[in-house]
Image (cartoon, rainbow, N blue to C red; front, side):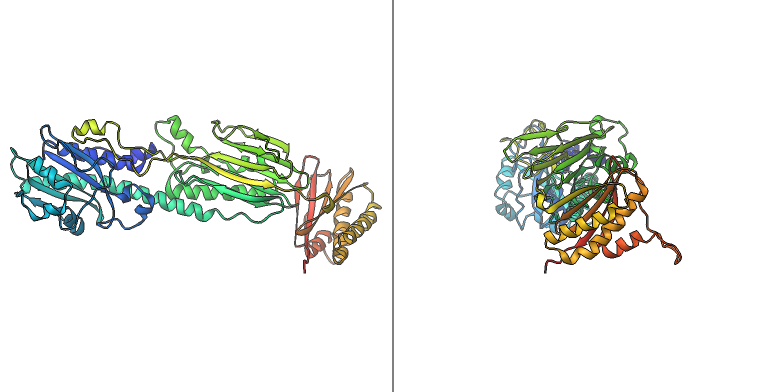
Length: 541
């Protein structure tokens, strides 16, 4: 009786290769010695490799020896080692069975059978073991050929009959259904990885960083992501993360998590706040919690994430992380500093670590996050001992990698001091005219006199609002970048809001004017209060 459950294996993150070999081993164990003296199983490469799994599995696929067993006194050697590519020549019963998906019984196999000459690997061993009867049964599920099993009887055993064929077909059917689960799981994992890569867009060109490169593990679960998010004031948000799960479900959860971080970043919240609101336990697992609650499964279900904001004007970085994630800074002189735990250090995920630090221009920021690895395994170590006949050891299996880290690297740049103008204004209505004059003078110095009228009007409205609703000094900052950015800061946390004034109202049109003149505007909150900003395009022509 075959009782192996590939679904349970998948929950333990065992590789498809391991699953396929275990199923094949149980098949030969069930057949020898009750049904045959020798049994050998070949399985399709579609059960080992994700690319092959996406192709139509069938006779055109490559095959590997997955299991072999023989009773004592027979099968002193096997044609192919476990895991080795198995050659299935045309014109043989094996190839015909793969082509038409029909089982075959050769009750009496003469030593001079013409097809034996086409198979120079198996034929000598069959002569040596005095094989006189043969059954070849395909491993088929949903009209897809996933492999085949060959049963042999040697001298001293009776030839195969119809009853034997029915037994062989029943065993092969059970194995094929299990292999089909492995095949579908591998296809789902491959499709999840395709979705993952489709969701990882190329980083945009930004002032704050250059040489931006992202990496997700090729052999990890498709729940890893990286993102580069443009922020107001020439700042940039950098995030890496990974979620547990498998296949399309993991990729879907990854896309949701990545989108949550990006959406909160667009609201210009602090990194720790972005993680607090985006990493909700009810939405970060792609699979149900394990019934046994093992530590390994809890780790695979956890979401790891790091979100950092770098400001090229102040040259300061603020980062927050959850789980096994970390940030390393490589200074231009080669000095390496790790900010917070590295990605290899496990974390309980209950809290968020925050770091604020200065970054010299030209530094390399390396964000890393522990990916959810795909546990790869070779064939069972005791396979050769169990077979008792395969000499020469086992062949290397196609999947033996280990999951690595999600990485995002970016080299920092700084806005030149000559492109920044900053003033502190008193909280007095007379400061509005002074702000307009300073702005006009600075734009002339920058060679942007055409923007003077609109910009002084924007500055006038924003400074007037700050004077009206705050009590302390007011900051005015102009930044010349790909766009002209105007920022007004104060100590009030009350954000201005746009409303439609009545025709008789004397005021209330300030933000409407700003919205009309600027291509973008908004508010971001700081520890002392807030910054209201507006951005205008610079005509490079």
